[in-house]
Length: 596
Image (cartoon, rainbow, N blue to C red):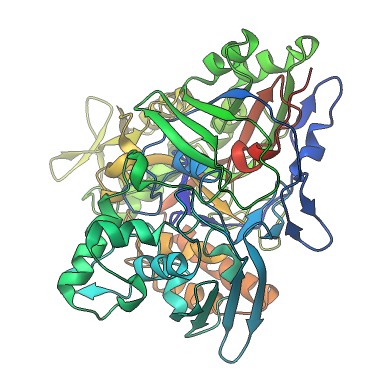
């Protein structure tokens, strides 16, 4: 799951990618004189019946300028300290993927780079056949070595005394693969130690596409990465892991080629990143925008205003804002088309079990009870999406099989009930209106990024908690999702998880000592349910097990889901844009054409 950052923050966040099968596209509504925005959830090159994709021929579209909420920070979005949705937004257009997820959350085979994918059972074995002639933008072949590196780095199998050599955001799925072999450079055979139903989510289907193994080989002096195994010489593994963990941060042009339709050509830190068409891309005719400039603008109202003023052609926000939505809806007469949908992202509060106060389950219960999620949802999401309701699950979205509300009885927004919980546990209300016990005041910080909606969320919770005798302080940190969250440096973390339509990626977030379990929750009942669920081959058999895990986590009072986060976007001068819930707006950028 990516933290939006994912996610999503939003730090969407994948290696941090959530496991979700979606609510479908087109929900929120659209405005525009000559386009049905909901229909844009299907890519032009998509064969809905065959579930395949092949890029169509389109005309050149010149230069397109686009805004999103946060900046790009890393080419390798799969490390624990870099993984976030805004890196994914960019890298979706840069790194080729085995499977593509469309705007309706259908998983489709990427025929631009793969001829076929075959699956055998007993043991589960997936064989990928790469098209002849697929290369990176620097001319190196794209194929088995790149897939092998993904597995080596993200399986968690290369271990040392004090942990693992590689530091991926998630090992989910890759840890189930026993081996990856290369019969030839265009053939990848992945053999699983046990069944893994969400295998389509690997190698880019639900996370980042394979990274360039030839670049890592050159930088580390390793002649053939496929000869490096999880049990190789520790010195070799450390050298390879050091580059994978740190060598692809920020932007260094010669280290960061493209296998997808666009290559990164410029990066202005905290401002913008520039993409240009990849002349060696294997897909379709080389149409679409010749250049795309993606600007980081945290304020969605400012994004909408820039679109209105003609400074940009597209705005794509994962941060719903009533004022921005109203402004966009009113621009139809100027040719601006507006879309919104309930995305595969949900805002939540993670309570850090390492904090001495929050290690007390009664404190966690009281905090949950004090938070009025309906007030927060009505004020911050209701103006963007009608009938918005608080989320009731950490694993399922409303409308999915398995969705049950486990939190309405635990989070009522009742100061009186919260006080009763604390007083029964021995807390005494002080003269300052804050409870204390054993000389310690019940004072906590909520940490989050500098997104206006998050600041409003904290303001509401501060007021709600104050009535319950709990002091909440605002800890706004623009870089919170770029390291602090994954290091567990917070009392309560406010961010969003975002996911592709695969549920197995939930396990690393909530499993005891899972790589994304930054809050250190531990539930033996949830662990056991996850263990069984991720090895089911029948999704219907897995669903009740995920429900079991969901219930068990709710009883730990560990994470409080707030609301499903809508995506919101507007565009003018471009024919069709769909903000894909997990991968962002650039998933079909190479299909964009000019419009009047």
